[in-house]
Amino acid sequence: QVQLVESGGGLVQAGGSLRLSCSASGTIFRPNPMAWYRQAPGNQRELVATITIGGSANYADSVKGRFTISRDNAKNTVYLQMNSLKPEDTAVYYCNCVIGREYWGQGTQVTVSS
Image (tube, rainbow, N blue to C red; front, side):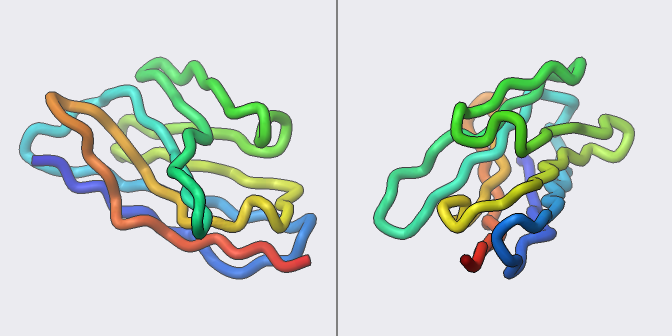
């Protein structure tokens, strides 16, 4: 099994920054491509960013230039640095990996006020 635990969400004003963390553990966890998704009320869950084991990243167009995904394989932790936040970034943010099947964290709420 794999456990993913997100942290770092909160309330921030537009233009502000937050750093999300996702700590991974479990009997079958190993360094693996990871991803951040988000889901706003009434919307489908959408992919925000992905990162390979080696650290290569890809981003949704809506967050390019503002968000940075990174990882520390020694700590089994993935980060999402979010800068220049906008009200439309408000959502629950989820960490994701696939090891045989998909695993999700419980999510962390990010609220950006205008």
